[in-house]
Length: 404
Image (cartoon, rainbow, N blue to C red):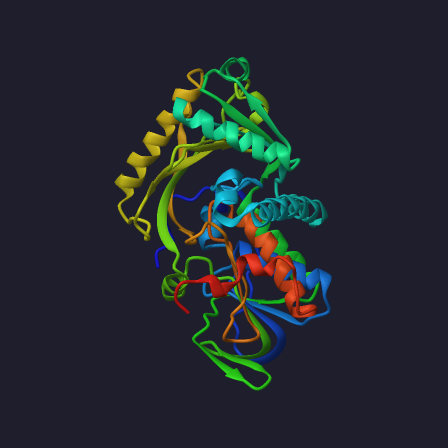
């Protein structure tokens, strides 16, 4: 699948990535991770640093060059599905537990970023979530009440309070604390470097061609070598269309831009992350060097278009949206791209052991909060492998998929 097209921004920000070898021998390990993007690197770093397991990572291309290179790097504990909506769908106990898990995962990402050997440009942030229409203001009232009831860090802003901070006003907004942004490509590359130092073996240009269950685990064949593994983790994101269909997930595509650095962002209050209640929604963030990353215009098609003019036209529409919010800015587009993203049937990620194939695990952070979900998944899978249990695994079980 063509996961992205256009001119990606993040790979241009980090040129110190490592060239890993291609697997050209037969090896043995405890855990094989298939996929070297955000999910795979989080699993590799977690297992490499926190266990004594012998871990191998393989990627069919260069690690980090799949969906992770098109990731916009927003990290939030709030889901695309609001807490009060999730309570109606899943019940109060499970919905609140899920939001608490996401908040904890954000803390884990922060701690991890602080302990890496290089700076992944991780910045703690607040998020402004505004009502796109007057009708949506009532949704934010219900969401504020739900978040406040369960002690999540949230404030409610009236229109005059929004316009006091920004050069625009909206019917209402929530401000959540404890969110963050990051350079996702740099984050992946540094995590893999540090995981390798911890003993994880990493192979690029090494696709998984065939997998066979054995008495002691799995025999995994690539083009030029074989891996015997006791456990296997699929961290393949949206790559495997057959798997996506089995899980009952939807694949769509979204557009994003990066601007040239701007001389001043004074009217952007504390450079908060900005997003809205409308679906599909516009989202905006800033970068360490004064750029704006913005995206949206989601479409119900899976594969990124090959038409550069279409990507440029969507990028210009996003630029106009930025200027509607910040009329004092005159941003110029430096990069514009389109990328595939996936959403599960119930808004929760797929994490855990396959119900019919013991020893086979999945870390698939489907949704707009994929990095946070993948951090959550790395911890859950680590405990499932080392302890045989994690209390949150029931929420994300693969068994809830519609077709297995």
